[in-house]
Length: 518
Image 1 (cartoon, rainbow, N blue to C red):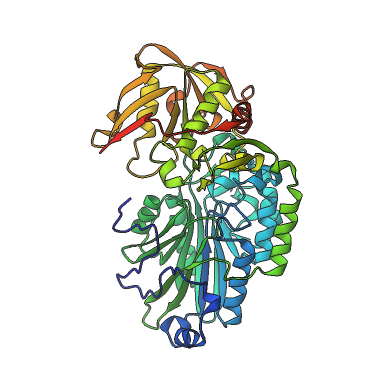
Image 2 (cartoon, one colour):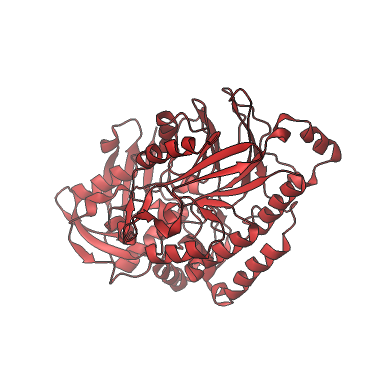
């Protein structure tokens, strides 16, 4: 990504936009002084008839490391309404999965909590498909908010999945705002989950429905997307009439402009909310006033939402609190590091898979390892293990020649220096990666068990069932001999727990399996 346009914190953006405020390190906005409130009432954004509150990639109903929490989010929305704003709470995909609770409740807890919090509008992300199409449709039916999904078609009905609308036009005072919703169509959605579903190219769907918004008199056009940032930029380039892209998929805040379009992503787990006040001048100029708002303990829990969240947390029971092992060192699951470099948790994860499969090596896509934090040293509970891998994926074992291993490794590091879920965490091998080499020849000096990788020698490789099916651009494993398939392999979470429990204590260190030169 272009680091002049993408920042891991909110930035003030210009290029014709009127933008007020940046993310703050102090107390949340409900604790503002009277003078501050008066200043805001006199500001240009106070005249905006719509205040969008954006979240995306929300996997937890409760705060993580003190930040986020859907009960606090509900309070923020209520505070905005009390301040005579017109808040519209919008979610740009990814919330039914993955999480500890979702491994038990299959996303039911997220729908219930978001219903209580007052979610107004949402589109689908890739993780909404984790439990299959039929359960997704069930969850969509349980939601009280409006779904807008422009490019996911139920082939049984020929209409958008789950009774969603392909586009929505809403009126806020004198302002008419049109919304479309676009979900990614890449291999990050396992094709075995897509029964009676057809995915339409996002730009094709946008080209179909954007004219409908204008025909219905929309003054402002908003695309709610769950796409990679590069695809959001391409969407804005192709359709400059889009005023605002409310996006998801990346797990850190992004605020950028592409020509006249503002692109916003609010991070993950509702640790921040992107507030975007929208207005249209008589001249036709669309104003977007942006502020990244931290969700902290300065916001009290809204009681009704808090009660819903607590009911599901209580139901998880004591089973998940069982201690399976002790870690003598912190375990690094930070998403940015995990998806661009070797980490000690990546090593532990890959080692556990290799032991379970009795394979020569492991290659595991870093996107399979979750938590997005550094787990502190100490007791590792069953809950913590599930936080590290909440998907229910299966370990598969294939027999492939060395040249396929090399191809897989090159594919895994092809997005560097950008972070990517396909980045390979490995076990049983070491390698060097040269970032200045062509993307298909970056990997060299691969050694398996200390011996050079031989192109024509057969190696057994432990991978995930997701990778076996070509997920995260690991299509090279297709049509290779499968020794242990998805129906027979161990669950990854089970293998990880067993590996830790057998040792009772673990202390993985980064030992130089992946040497990256720049």
